[in-house]
Amino acid sequence: MDTDSTGTLARLLLALVLCLAAPVLRADTLIAIDNANPPFMYEQDGQAKGLYPLVLEAVFARAGQPVAIQAMPWKRALRRSENAEVGVGGIYKTSRRLELYDYSQPIFEEKLIVYVHRDKAFRFTQVSDLHGKRIGVIRGWSYTEELDEAIRDGRIKVTESSSDKANFKMLASGRLDAVIAIELAGQRIIQQLQMHQVLALEPPLSINPTYLVFAKQARQQALLQRFDQILLEMRADGSLDRLVQQAVGNR
Image (cartoon, rainbow, N blue to C red):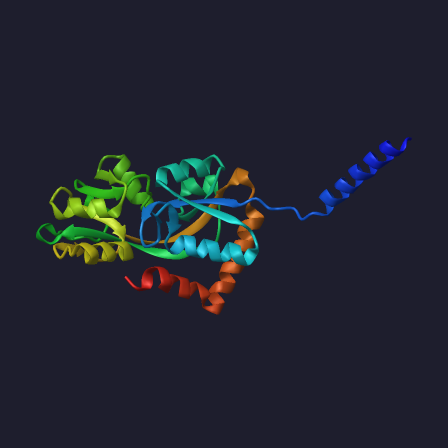
């Protein structure tokens, strides 16, 4: 072998050794959130904001796993997650979704409230009290399985919007009989828009834990187990409570 060939081979071997020795860069984990559900998850100036992005970023930082959180319309987030393109944060649990997704432990609990106009208030104790009424909901959301079934069967009519704020404005103007919203989000909107004519009914429609999920075909069970472990640590050391206060405590 001549000198030039020997030098070329040596350079190739050195390049190979350097490549093998270099650290392997892990790709970002992609997670989608709803772009219009403040203070829990929303988009502001092109960035994902709210409680769930804060929690997700904190957990993944502790895990040393890069994460990219994307805010988008909820129906798009669900469609992409079902195709295993992204995970989804802040999602509820339903029997159908249990067939599609692997779930984390609960991140937070959301209290769903029925809101009405004070002049058109009615007694509410169960889903059947909403039969025959027009209710404002968020497009693509599942609220409870009983309510979802009543909507599918036509026992409850719905107007779908992209945000709670749009639904509350229609309620205040008399175009809806009621709106279903998360309590903290509803309180925030009533305060911001000074909607004193809007009344929250008791009891709550439901109290729904929220989760991080990945499609089963994404095979992210190990990542979810690590997520659960760190979430438990954050509950114990108080850092999770501090994030909740940062996101929703100063309404």
